[in-house]
Image (tube, rainbow, N blue to C red):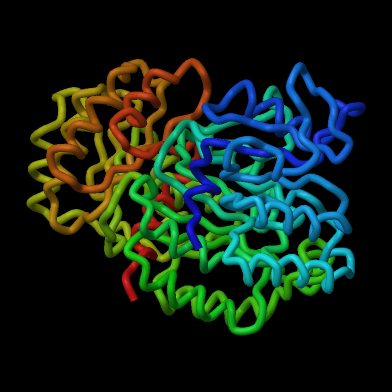
Length: 455
């Protein structure tokens, strides 16, 4: 199947636009795409009429242009006939927003639309989904524009069975500066499933990292997906729901998926080098890290800090995640001490963590980070910055980023995320160095590089 019409449409029909209810999902989708995106949008309703000065077509076949993408927002029992109309009219693909299929006990109805589409080689997303957010191309989410938080254009693609989880992750991505290449809510995934989108995204030149929120799989789907993810040349991150009996029951009522044996699934992910995020917080950290760095690491961490307490906490978190914080060799320690400013040289602790104390200035952080970037016993550096220390300026993020650009050694930063420190944070982000608002998040970014190993 060709997915280009789904993700880069030039024309779109919204089937189910209401002439009496402006809050109808079809109306929301029509309005945002008509006003915000570079594609022609046609309203469709079997009663015809006029909507916002535009002709309302009674069927897709009446539209004078070929429709790339049809968004179907009608009652579930009408979806088969509408889908048939789209296929007969030569549409390129569809998003089925409508619910009321397998998740509510109507599996036969869901099987019917899947059969129709499969026979015609006609791609569709859904049903029971939000559909597609393709930056600068299309947005089929039935959420008002003023309520949407849109991450910047980037290189992370996310596929989710849950529309709510997907939108929530987009909010978190935007807050952390993680850019999206594509977001797809697959809902009940009657036709297009995770494996199909994995194959597509593996070839997509705009995508560098592929993230999945997974609730469950059909028979044999899970193993096929994990094997393909392990063979993918791009990092694949999976967040799995249904780890508990209660979670499994909730999944069944949500998208009618089988949650399966979580422990087995988790073990297979690890076996094939697929990164598993345990929660939403880890998912964001992993995506930010792996979208910045291509390389994998052994997990030997060098820590540079202006606070001994922060350094100690970071060591504990590293230990919790199986990362080591090795004591620096005598030679590296000597080089490091000599590079520090005289006022800090006598009081700094340089074994690892490298504690520059509250007296450390920009030049000390630069000297310590430069030294660790050349040390063979360290393969990733975590810098813990406390911007309220008097010797640190807002230029430090950009200056530390230049060290990574020269040496190639991965660098991760912790900076409290408040508006007052925005310029410091942007100095890192604009140079593609990931920044976390928490120590644990910074450690997780390093951990992602260790865990993303080829199988």
